[in-house]
Image (cartoon, rainbow, N blue to C red; front, side, top):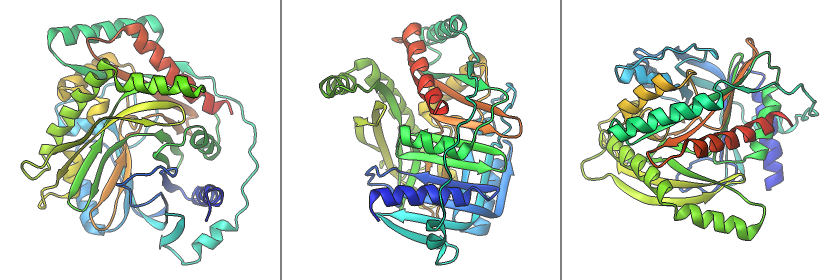
Length: 417
């Protein structure tokens, strides 16, 4: 299949899967990634499922994994932190997503190098999907999106976090704020297609649990496993694109040489290295790439890659547990950063800054970071997304606020299509 044919097939496949109460797809959007086994995965229907709140969820996931030893797709919410450390989440759970949800699919379709494979399901499923007709896009009322936090309060909270850094409590913290819409009526399928067209990224995802939807344009891998290798690719460092080619290259070079962004990035790289030692054979943790600059349609990003050889006796679920939640969305040191996040943020993170992904039958897995994502509860008509950034002592509150507004405007643009 050529590129245009593949795009149409993926749209039809998601349309077909969306008829099921539970489904998901993960799309690399043709990005070259030496670690990816598949360019596209679509799972639909649930033979078995696991739906839990934090408490003993990781242990239950291990049991679920061992029982089925099959393809398992799911999500990990940020609030699973509460079973890993002595932490709480006091904010209202407005979206009401589970803290942990996994399912064994009835159907599974994959694409790799332009070839479609039906992994679970009838051999002619690809043909059935291809015969579907895509619906016409219909105009909808644009949800009225508003911030949970006004600017003055945001600036004050950033200064409080900088004071905690000056005191030596932390080196860095990822501080986020929510934008939300009540009485929002959207077509999640259409919104996801538009989001993916505007911002095609390597860890895009659509996840549906009954009336709850995650529409994700994530550029970040949380954690992956291939054979005996474990790897994480934290992002810290963002710069906007320019339509002028020369200016865009200057922006890219400036990001590469930005000492503040490098400092933020290396702090999280050190945290990830420490997290991976819990799962690694001794002496195998290494930084494969530091301060790599990668270009996406809307932004340039600074991405590092940290890897290790996994302890062969370690359960795959424990490898995920040992690094959760991801350092790029907490800060360093991780525990104190999470305590300050709970103190200063006004909204419950829930699925945001959690992870979407899958376990394969051979023990390999891949999970993204749920950022740049629209979360929607259809029954409650509640729509939400969060944006944020790393706060260090070198941060200025005004600049951090401007970065949040830039990220928020990109999400609102998606809803206005």
